[in-house]
Image (cartoon, rainbow, N blue to C red; front, side, top):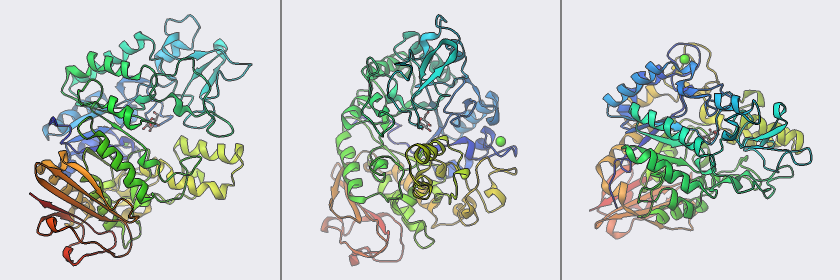
Length: 554
Ligand code: GLC
Ligand code: CA
């Protein structure tokens, strides 16, 4: 397998709005991030993925971009960005930018022109259609509830928006649009950035003729049907030829609805498209039958089955990204661990061990390294996220759900769980801001915060630090082949890695009670690379609640 720096890196995702506020307006900003680079250096990560920092009216917190080459007012200036980039580089940290080009904001100048008239030169930058019998052109539902079509009075036509009406989809079938995007990317590369995370990139090529989709509920068709469209690989190969291949950068595609077979194309090891993709099957396992909103826990047997499929399926032919958390996902401790005082830290470490010992590039989402948890939402008024708010009203008002039934489900899976401010210390507002935070701080910040974690040797932070260091020191953690053991055990996640005659055994007890487990003979006098409990004997054959350890023979 070819060795590359991005396979050997650990990525840290920053959601700038919630990371650190430098000027007291309650909103995180670029100077805030720069002030925390030493913290990230201490953690040991190699690369920062910055969620969007471009100019935006913030309908979807920066995922609705009105100017790809300017910085969002609240976040600072281009000079602030340049300083962040050079300060990061000075510490050996790379910066990967979010690239949101399935859609723009409706306030982007391209769209302002496009909607002005049918014969505007930019009309075909977006996807415009006549209505069908006085209604939407097809049945597609938006990922954020409601129809995926917006009627526009000026020209009596509809435009497509797979996300909010303020996020019109670009028409990638138009070669001029592709050239605009590639030129913009080139200018960022010339600035010296280190790569792109590509937002919903699997959705850019729409199916021929925009046919109706199978119904996802009584109201709308499943817009997942727009994923992996007819020309997506062709367009990414063109992007690769025109831009990516000219720079030593890393790329990761956010590929909604990607299958293993599709991922082998997107992230093929010949390098003709992207370096790796995010797949979402594993984080969908705790959803309800009809939607993601639920209060279920992640079931371990299907989780093992799924991650094993991806570990083995991409080995040698493509490359995995490893993640449980990001700005769209609730906190993993609530899904897979135990947020109670008794088990929060040990379960956070167990989850981290399980993920970080796999083949692929790991992603740590801000606060994950502290064991941050979901927020105790009490009412829909506590939400900021448009996906959660829209879902609540659509499900209660149009689909007849009782608020008392649906609210707990939405609260449990809301994207806002990940977006509460970073907990830096136990001062007011967790040290995130001296002003009023744009989204409430989780009240548990007095006990869960970076200042306390950084100081303590047995903290979740110190544990992540060690996991990251191990990955930098052991090739087998990056490149080793994966094999699952005990596939049917509903509580233990046990697997091996193997490379050039060396072996790792990874053992994680995902339950809150003792379990019997004895490592195989060949591992018994192996070296303990890491463990989340100190003073008990691994070879007594008993695993404590949420115990995890890694043995190495070589
Ligand atoms: C991606 C982003 C999400 C955003 C959506 C639309 O899924 O991760 O935050 O809302 O795309 O851009
Ligand atoms: Ca600020």
